[in-house]
Length: 204
Image (cartoon, one colour):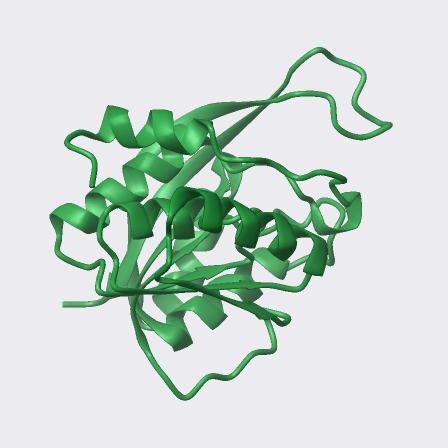
């Protein structure tokens, strides 16, 4: 277990990323700083008992949660290649609490419920429009509280959807993430995207 959020961030930064990212799934490494902020916040709230990482990719949220003492963690992703990277990373990090499930997050139904869900859903640029909200709705079905990342211009829209579902959204952090060239359409050395990290819980 790490003693500070900065130590956790440095650990996450060293975790492996996608070997062959798939554009249609909008696969980008989740920003290490945002992962650390979310997982550290959940740790301080005492939420890291039973964790699900939705659209886990290479498992950054899941492995960070395990490193901070989560007892049970489930990584869910539709891409078996990403899960293979996540499983190997978890093994190398000694994160034995992490299990893996190959499934479509937007369609999954599980009997068990989790204390907390973490997710960095597709923004709907290359994936079908509304995928981010479908991810969020699934997360709220599966977990008591959700940490979720979205593009900053969608903040009002996402907050409205959350309210319709009977929950409330609090912004924990706004950030500009730098994405290195990964796909053919990337022409710049760095592609900057404004995002927000939110904590979603049921209305008091």
